[in-house]
Length: 108
Image 1 (cartoon, one colour):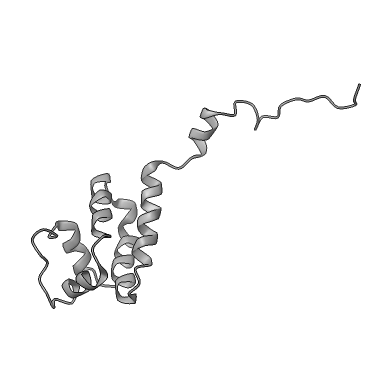
Image 2: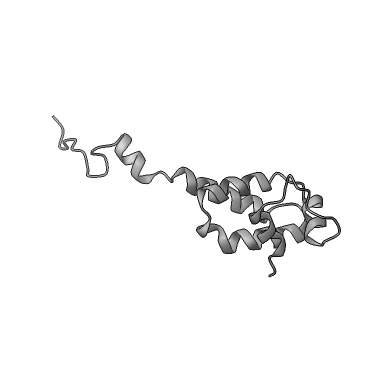
C-alpha cells in the first residue's frame, strides 16, 4: 500500500530494561553529584570554599561509607561548621569524625 515499510532501527531494538540499565547512572553517581552541588552551594561563601573545595578535590575517591558520612555532615548548619573550622568552638563529640576533621583541616 505505501512506499515505506516499518523496520526497527538498532536503537529501537531491545528497548526496555536492558537499555535503561546501560544508560542510567548508578545510585552512587547520583549521590556524588548531589553532594557536590550541596557542598558548593551552602549559602555562606566561606563554607562554599571550604566544604566545596574539599568535596571537589576528593569526591571521586570517597568510599560508599564516606559518602554516607558526608551526607550526614551536609546537614550540619553552616554557622556551626564555620565556628569549628575557625577554631572558635570545639567540635562536639557527637559530630567528631575522621572525615569531618579532614574537612575542617582542608586549606585551599
